[in-house]
Length: 103
Image 1 (cartoon, rainbow, N blue to C red):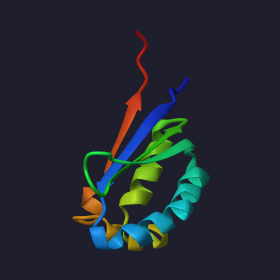
Image 2 (cartoon, rainbow, N blue to C red; image 1 turned 60 degrees about the vertical axis):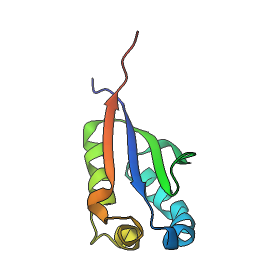
Image 3 (cartoon, rainbow, N blue to C red; image 1 turned 30 degrees about the horizontal axis):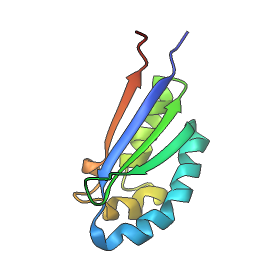
């Protein structure tokens, strides 16, 4: 049985692109959900301007890898503009997958 994963994607948006970036997030959310994300949440840091985090669940590591590739691939039509919005480009889109631990 594969274990579901919690995924965190973090990046900083250039100040001049905040508005188009925020307008694009609905399509980005829909796309990652098509690929297997569920329980999608989106945050802006309270203490670091223009720093954003996406959090969601995936059923397995393969779904995580697919979404990670999608979000970091500048040739992907959905993320082409997104990469320009990110300070440092797609290499600064940080993705992590976590397995839940029980205490």
